Length: 248
Image 1: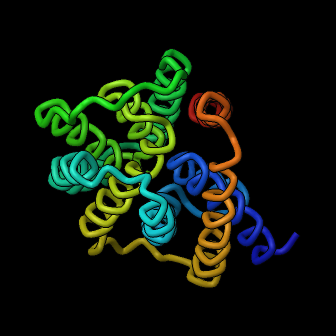
Image 2: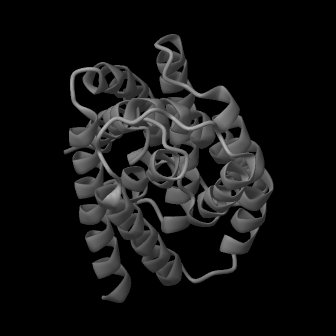
């Protein structure tokens, strides 16, 4: 299969995940770029941030029109994560790639377990608590910068379990957090000399944007508990694959 076709297929799947689940896109983008499209880990993390930033911003606009974005909560998360994302992205350049891969797998697995423990019944959302939102946002920003991922796979569990948002509202709000954190991490990587293959990144991003629109429509047809289980299963699978690669 040609690199262009692989990029289109992978981009569509990742966009679908972002649109439907508010996360999982970047956690899938990094291994797809490495194992399917022969990117180095350094190039894959930077390319992933580009893809996820553009795709998340597109999906955010769609969720916002449907009233699924809690702007105050999302703004607190996003603002608190900007400086940690920049600092962690700078630090990541000095960490061995095997360590980054193992950390990536561990974080994804922990996020999946958190989602499985989160009660799935719809609840009345609690008013946002600034201190808790800011603390969680700072942690998410650090993860985004360090691992080169959008952080949505952690933002959704945090928004559901810490702040009590309903699943669909958490999905929409997480897209705001992903967009801002990814953009901050990209700023920190702007001076990197890592070469990027735009002939792959451009079609990958275009397919992801189209997939995100379909993912948003899919989210309106599937219950919150089902979305949570799918989200957790995807994360556990990716975590197992990445951990295996890190230790072999």
